[in-house]
Image (cartoon, rainbow, N blue to C red; front, side, top):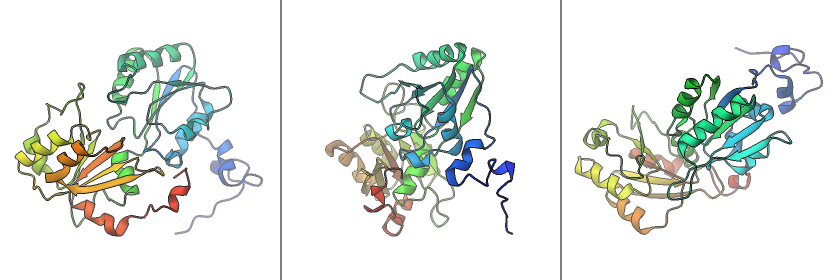
Length: 289
């Protein structure tokens, strides 16, 4: 099947006779970003080029951008001139905004009649607390839109040459947060079930508690020689990947100064990295990804 695009087709961005490339997006019929509404946009796993088209459109339309700690500074350069950019990030062990205050701030800005862009690292609904923010907006009667982003548990691993799923290894994958609201090993997780439920476990924000998590998985029957990769700054020039085993992962996390943010993956998909590690030094020279 072939698709022929007419240069004058209005559905493809307006006046194609004069516009080319990204310029065609300027008149594309994106959804309206209305005053008094909030868009929660996932910025992706770091590299600015992994932002979605809808995310870019939101940057061009917003009156104010409320952004998280893991949003790359390069993305913020794409806002319209004169737009207010407000930091509301949270990082473990560092002074951070309180979640309730962030949610109420979004309501306040929307009720002032602003076009509010809440820009979050990764995907808003994958360990991003976007659901909590939307609940607050809904209770206040503020309309909102979700713009999904590439989650680091998928996109970040891809940049490390590790597929989250591969039919020769796994038909399921578990996504798991590495800490609870107190910063400790999640107490509400059934570690016995997790240990054997899937061949692959992908953990967010788990480096600090990896010693305790590994111990619980091993105690529940997970094999000590199960491969583990710790992927830091996954889609950025400073990417680092530390490969080990589940039996040794706790020691590594305790003794090594592993950079964060990081994704931890447990399972034999790690073995594909030998062949699929495509993000070499030459490619890292491009800051957009």
